[in-house]
Length: 388
Image (cartoon, rainbow, N blue to C red; front, top):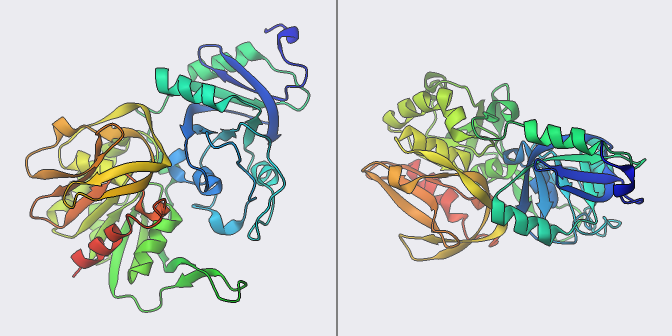
């Protein structure tokens, strides 16, 4: 047991890493303990979308931007029904929300979802640590009375198995098939009737395989005039083709793609052989690569943020992209007939591929997240064109 005298008198939260490092701060959100991989995100906006992105399952997010929570929270900015992230680490305390769309404060929103947070942390120092030694395992504990069992928290962090070998897609995927027809957000002239639209006259039909799909991806597909049928991650190729789609979309999601691939890859190979157009994003990109015969590996610290430059190798154009992934496709493992189409300008890693001579392509980043703000929306139009 750690000497209570070593704990700052005003500490109400602590982040304990697997090596025993204890980072104290001020707690907010729910008074609970969560254990997972500690990562950082460099986005300046969109914290609610980040916290509800299913791809963050199993992760505690360190926000590098100091002002998080200042625009509050609302139901429209959810990327899924419930938050997937385990908690958050901030530099500054959350302030009262100042935005006309805010419905509640971030602190209250986190409490409602049983998620903890810690403020007062030197997030620059923690981010440098993650960059130097990789994303550590950590236990985040909020305790209003300031009492912590540091050794027990260290053991929780050290014993956590990590994301390698972990299939999280089944945990965040839908359990039943459903239809999606909501389109993108629109701003009205009166300033009061802003909201999402509805696609009423579908031109094409897309089946989206939900490995942890973000809602805004589905909205972009609907905005292209597609009726979208969303199916669980474990759906077979025969079941997917039984819906009679014009094309197939492979969604984003969390965890180790090789673990998800145990059940998904054999079905994806059948879908590839079907001749249907296929478009994958994030985990969907990785799953497609695995089905084509490539391999993936865990990254040192991953890519997470809304300011990642990616070059389209076919046009020479550089896109500012939103990213969230801890695994990457190994370029040397790509088979003949698969071409790299996009590359990260940060580290040169593979950010997009296509199958030569077939209507099949994918990207590692998130074109729906609008960091550019619309640099990458052409990918949805490209997919729509392939549908005929």
